[in-house]
Image: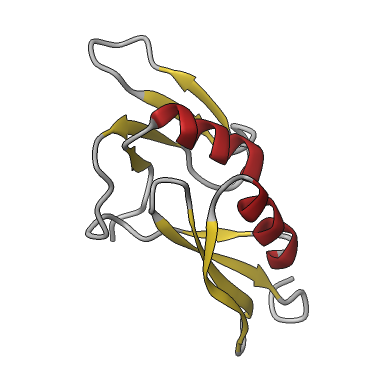
Length: 123
């Protein structure tokens, strides 16, 4: 079994992508103090559930990993994505046995999923 322990976002405009992710999801993104241009992405408290990642400069590719974010409200996140310059690529729809699913894209064209779990299914 291979557990996901890190994700990476590729951005043609890292400053724009940083503003998007901080505004849309509240992530903390800081420049890495290393030998090449890279940003560290913290998605929540260190002791919490989930993973952190990084961002590099380059041209986004649809061949990259597709990530799905567990959110409290798909509609609220979609509103923040739109107001932060992103777009909706799949409108919210029921996902039987799970909850509600949607897909969005960031300002760089990276697409990812949103899932709002149904509390009666996951407790």
